Length: 518
Figure 1: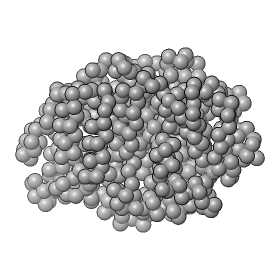
Figure 2: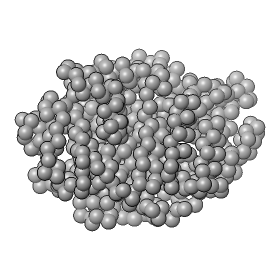
Figure 3: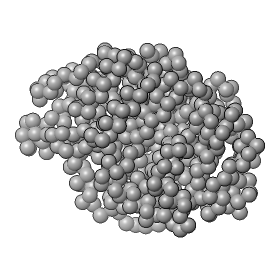
Figure 4: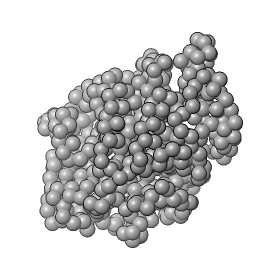
C-alpha cells in the first residue's frame, strides 16, 4: 500500500481553488476528495522521490473536510487526529495573516526545550485544533530558514553519518539529505496537521542553503573553491523548488512553468533536469524568478527573493539585480489599497545598525583602501552585515519608492532572531519582524544584541556612515515596539492592521504583545 512521506500540505488557496502538495513512498495516483468530488494527479519523480500537487478547482464554499487517497487507499486524515479542511480566501481579503521565520526542527523533549525553547509552530497547531474560526489565519507566511541545512538536528546528523563520511561532514550534501531534512521538519503530528489545513506561502533565507548565502562576491568565490558546494547549492535550490516554491504558485502559474510541465509529464526520473535548472538558477539568477505576488482582496502581497537575485559586483552591489528590481517596481505599481511585503531579511533595521552596514559596505568597496577593504569583507561575513542596509543603493531606491506611494506598506520579515516594529518618518511604511519560531539566542547573545544594535550602534552608526561620506537615507525611522527575544509567531489582523505576537507554552500559546499599525 502506498504511504505518505510528507503532507498533505495545503499551499496556494484563493476564492475558488486550492492546491495540496504530497510526497509519497512510491509512484502512484493521488486523489483528494473534497466537497464530494475527487481531484486526481499522478506523482512525478526526481532523485528517487515522488511528488504530486493536486489542484482543487471551482470551489464555491469552504470544504469542511477532505481526504487523501493513494491508488485508492485512504491515507489521510490519520486515525485519532483532527480532520483537515479548506477555507477559501474571502473576496474581501484575509482577516489575518500569520508569519514568522527561523525554525529548527529538533525534538520536543525536555533537553531540547531547554536549549531551543518551545516550538511555537507546534504550539500554534495545538491551539488552532481547539480554537474557534475567528482565531484562524487565512494564510501562514514562512519567511525563511524553514530548514537549517548547515546546522542539522542530532537525528539528521545520524542520517548523514550513516550514509557517508565525506565533506561536509555535519551539513547537508545532496538532494537525498535535503529530502530527509524536509521530512523531519514537517512531519511532527501537530505541525503536519497545521500545514494540512492552513494555507502556506514561503520564501527562503540563507540557512535554507547555508549561513551568509550570497553575502558577497568573495563569499561566492570562497564557497566555489570547496569540493562540495556546487553539489550542495544545486541540491538546495532543487529541493526548494519542489518542497517550497511549487506550492507558492497558483494552478495557472504552475501549469505555465516549463520545468513543472516537463517533470509532471515525464515517465522516468527527472533528477538530472531538476539539477540543470538549479545549477543555472544559481549561476544566472535572471534565468528564474523565485519572487512572486498575489492579490489578497484590496491588499497585495509581494514576496521578495533577497538571496538568489542579488548583484554582488563590488562598487555596485544590489539586493535585487536590474531584472528583479524592474519586476518589483511593476508589482508595486499594480492597483492595491495596501502593500504587504515579504522580505526574509528586515528592510528597516535599528537606525544605528543601518549606519554600520552602510559604512562596512563602503569600506568593502575601497573607501579606505584595499587593505581595509579586505579586513572589512571579513568583518562583513563574521557579523552578518548583509541586510538591505549593506546594499545601500537598493535600500535607497526602495525607500523612495515606498515613501512616495501614498498608501500603507507593511514589510514582514524575520532573520535577526528578535521581534520588533519600526515606523518610517515618511510615508506609511512599517517594518514588522517576527523571529525566531524556534531558535532563540542565548541570554548572553540577547544582551550582546541589545548592547550593540540598540546601544553602541545607535551612538556610532551615523558617525561611521558620515566618515565614509555616505549620503543620509531617504527618510528616518524608529523602533516603536520591541525588541522581544522569545520564540514567537505573529499575526497581522486586517483591515485594522494590528500585529500580535504569541509564544508557546508547550501545547498552547499565549500573547506576548500587540501593536496597532497605520
